[in-house]
Length: 344
Image 1 (cartoon, rainbow, N blue to C red):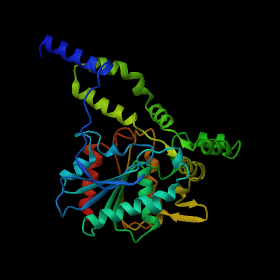
Image 2 (cartoon, rainbow, N blue to C red):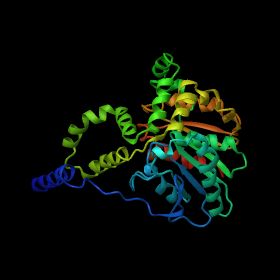
Image 3 (tube, rainbow, N blue to C red):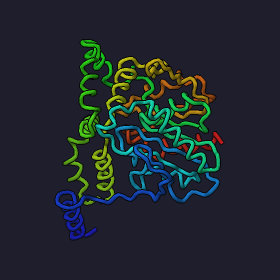
Image 4 (spheres, one colour):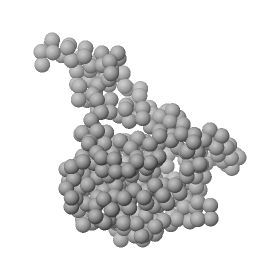
């Protein structure tokens, strides 16, 4: 590349990052909305053949649903299409103060079962493979455990926290909560109606503080490398789109998961109701990340000791951050492809 070309590219990228509209534009995989209602929009990605098996992508709360379709090169949805499968996505949309009474049960008993049945019906009654990321993986497992009549063929949980005893920072949070039994945090969440999108975004960025500190140097070092800057911009768009948690959902997460570690003990309590993960009776793939600063790999691997009703529980590891392991083509996606082929 000539010096003139280098200067031109650097100037164009610098302008786009400062005064322009940014580097790169979103290129979502084409999809069709099958049904649309609050917190349960169901999409089918276009391009699958009639006989291709169904895969329902289950995002977590506090993350945009496009986590499965960040860019053409970082899209699990596109990978599944290219692998001869029919991917679907359930999108919860924005969470507001009006949603403060929504809890785990809304997803486990209503939103996800409805999506699973719709996907199965759209595929002529085929059973559905679920792929969940982070809390999405936990929701997928609890949904299957709560109703064994659902047409579920397998579950893949990537970066899913299945024991909070292994989560970074939880021990310190429990120590603080012991001062008042956790009532202050619970009251604060109830008063505000949940955890705001802004707070979620701040907390997510804090887990990758080194990335934020190195950002100016990274940009300067790659100012002529447009593809690298486009990948950076994709992650920025993801972080800037993180939604919040409903108040009741987060208080359940705080009390039953963080403080009491119900999920790690294998039985989650919602009032008088109990859901045992041992009641999951389909094959399960777990993927953890040794470098994941949000969900420790050991917290994911713990599922191999609690999912005792599953005929097979595989555990694999992938490099990268919490988001990085979801978009790890050479590891996570390869594990998923082999797992789904073996389940056939």
